[in-house]
Image (cartoon, rainbow, N blue to C red; front, top):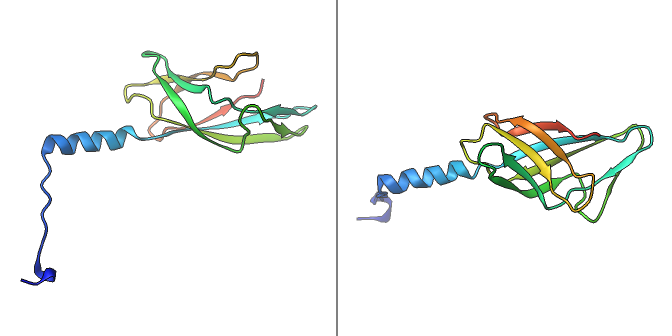
Length: 132
């Protein structure tokens, strides 16, 4: 028998297969696209690693994995007057049962971002205006 004529068969237990598919589905990341307006005087923004999505029922938190377009604490991203900063936050998955959640930046000073009542959608991509 030549190598080209051989076939391979993968045998996977159905329970293992279901668990693997479930784990893949659970890995779906959540993207929150944010905007902050600079106003008439300009402002600055930054994100702390202690920024989470919080399920309104279970209180389970989704952790911030990555940011695009905004500085991390302690650095600042300057927003010029009459300009808009657009940035994205990428979070770990929330439980599949989550229907409504909040964006919470828990920091040891005033001014942390808080946006409540985000309704879950199939794409897990959200838009929020964080302008004060």
